[in-house]
Image 1 (cartoon, rainbow, N blue to C red):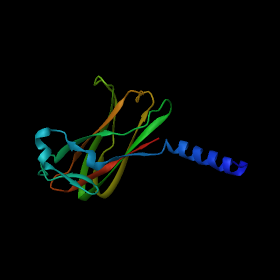
Image 2 (image 1 turned 90 degrees about the vertical axis):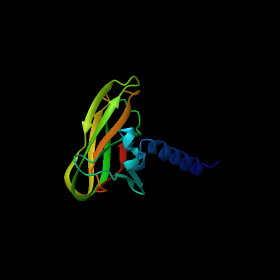
Image 3 (image 1 turned 120 degrees about the vertical axis):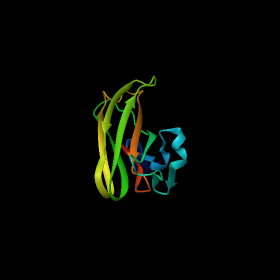
Image 4 (image 1 turned 135 degrees about the vertical axis):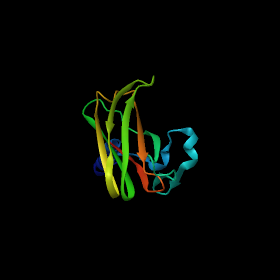
Length: 156
């Protein structure tokens, strides 16, 4: 191989390696009913999950595991996106838990009294996200098809 080709190959490999820390996506379609008896109320659409459960008093609570990178220092951000029809509220909390179910940390990412598209971010430190931790998102969304949770982006 020529030196030029070899250099190009190394640069390409480095680009792929650095992409390993790119944002990971968890689709809104991964959300399911928090209460199994309400599964029939969850409606999956091309851009996420919504509910036909009556709006009052709370809409519906959905839960999803969140894809993440393992970090050993710094922070990790979880950005939740969604959409409201008119002024609505969605409350989301992210939990970091160990395999035995022990909660290490939780962070809120609420979109309260928002109309239209919304984005909220919660950040956790490496201490809050040990390498064996799993991340879970629990979101209470508006009923009557008035809100959609699109998904969660995790960086790094």
